Length: 373
Image 1 (cartoon, rainbow, N blue to C red):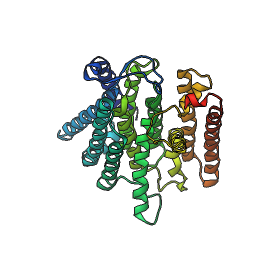
Image 2: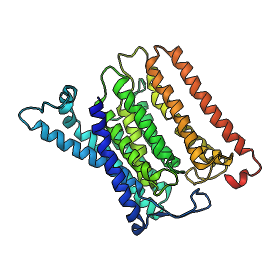
Image 3: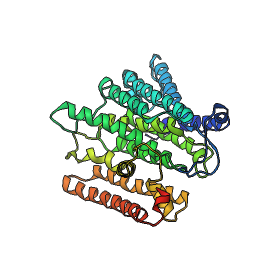
Image 4: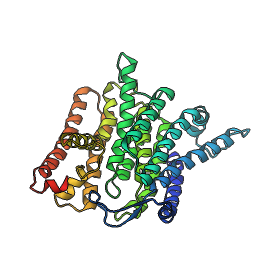
């Protein structure tokens, strides 16, 4: 299993770290510069386009991996150095190529749209329309959906489309401080990969491999995005990241028939509880104030932590630790036998979200709130 993890993670890391370094020099020539503004936290012009590094890390690693598998399968005998478990699943890699490249193709559509948005500041309406179209293609064309044990298939289809769109925008919203969105993506990808490899009777090799490749790409990007960031991922990276996270959590099939209870379907909600809560609360705040839910402001959890006196790096670390806490709860769902135990874990996560809500409320009621929201 270590061989598999390193084979997925390592090349993606080196591709992302080198291509992001290249983008730091090229982005200004492409006009991809994020200028400081009233509702932004950085003080100096910073290159965007780090999403290109993340995208290349995933696409090139998957493409090279498929070429290697294709070459190996054409040999008269499989190489002796390959682990037996890898030999067993090599044919499945080629059989699932169509669905794999449908996912990456849809991600590329969002990546290109995000790149155009980074440069030209597109309206939220066409962006939302393309996101919806991509989600529909993935759910209906790629048959990537959650049944949620509903008797009517349309319910699962609708919830799957909403889930993908929600995560696309969640990671886009989270990209408001150095290392925040990429760090949460890395935490979630590693936790989901761990579940896919160890939490079910039959490991989900394809999904866990993609998650590990994504984790490697994010780690390479974070080398340049850690505070103080030398480059931002931009909408191109955040939308690509959100789409992959939404799709892979659906494709992973967190419920296993060998598991005694269906409570494990709550695992994705637990791991992603913090970004989902942040997105939903920000949208509600903006709507309550009569503003567009896609209008940028400083209503996010990370912004409110800095308003309470934390430095930006410590605010980001706090959000990361909160994500790890709820994520560990999601992993624990696979270690408990029944709903009674699962309810305790869910209660723990709700307590964490309540703490987040209390901290946000503390800032909402400060005298200077008008200047910070």
